[in-house]
Length: 474
Image (cartoon, rainbow, N blue to C red; front, side, top):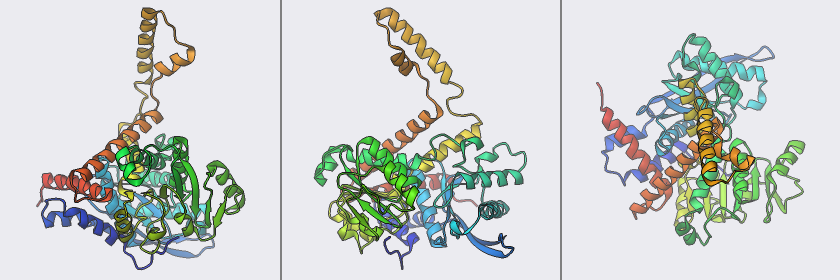
């Protein structure tokens, strides 16, 4: 992966913010309030190892903005996690929620561990103790701060968090709303697991569907036939690649920590995943024309769209000159440094910024939170009513026209929406509207030359309005 030494992720986010702030008319004090992290909680706690020893774990929870409550953000399990990273990710969450009109403030958590070095029982102890520390300091709750999965964590860890919180808050009616990304059996929501990847794919589709913008890149409009390289085969990268392939894009490259593979005619995602499951590596895949032990080289191959879906600072000043893609879709948080982003934009490329591009996860997390507060699954109350109403309408039309539908046609027409269909509909509407809102901001001001700046401008305006309406008290 690309070198990320001697960089400050939070400073990068602040640099993007400062650049965008010049296109707003808000006073410096208000901008400082928006930019600053409101609460940074760093703590350490001991766990007992399976061998009988004791290990002290470093952890963080950062609440960046309280312009809306609760705050929202994932928990990252990584030995590379640090305070600067958690602060940056919390800030991005604030702007991300504002961009897609999700009523949360931004937050983020981090536990400094390599999950491969711990047993499942030890990971459970770490997660539950982390949750207890958050409860003690009032840093978690359905109306306070709502964590979610991030790098290194998933449904299992969210289940432990939910159970721990409920145990410490017996009888709290909305307790399951204290965390999102839970499994369906524990009041999760259909579509959450693939939500971020689906959102990335929709964002890319919306971008390439604008003929005017594609003409400037020398590309035709539409996702069909576009050559894509995806970095990262985790949850986000896999689902992004899968949905893009379904839309007609050609997956020509895949990059993982063990290396990268490339085929100009396309790679079969399912076959690559199966090969990696059998061998532990994407290298050696028979369908690859080229492979690279240095994964970073995979980013530099011929393609139309590059999707970094791994960690931050993967595309920097040191390698941006060799990136051949015309569009970078930031599925990961902060994969492109400010210097690299500026260079790429200057040569005419389009960057779909992370704070919008990967907002599918928090959007569907919002739906899960609403489901937990309402205590009923989406579609449960009206699905059958909708089907009966549609059946009555179809029957009337058939009688009036004398034309009868086939059983398959009738089933398609009268079908009521399931929870998954409603979630996907809400996600798609959110991503589509938000993309064009960002693009319109850019087009209205000729001084704004990239989508990231436009996205920041939109986010700053929304957060500023919230703070101004609330005022300062006492």
